[in-house]
Length: 128
Image (tube, rainbow, N blue to C red):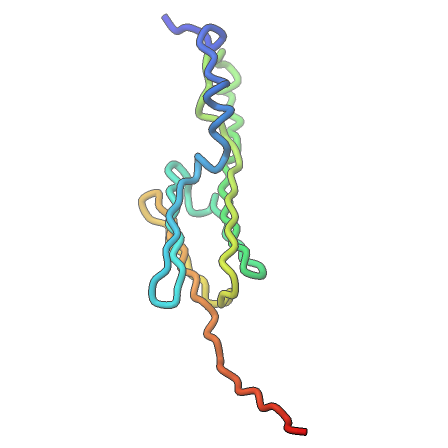
């Protein structure tokens, strides 16, 4: 027999789990590039969006709710597999936004963000 959520409410534990806990990631630096590796199990490539603006990298993923006739006939006692939108943002500084690349494989998103190459310019000082 299934026991309704009413008797075993885990809302307190869910309170401490913000949206960021749903999108675990590692960020590391190597060879003048930043690498962002994020676990997105259950998402498809077309449900993920990546934006970069002025050094701010935003990764969002959204699952649209299914609207099935079969789903409308069900009387759920507990429904944990909800469809939702998650988003994480990171400030990476001065990066080459036009050269950012991404790959999604086996539930892991890898974003490669090249740093902007600093061009050394000499500044001459006038002598009075």
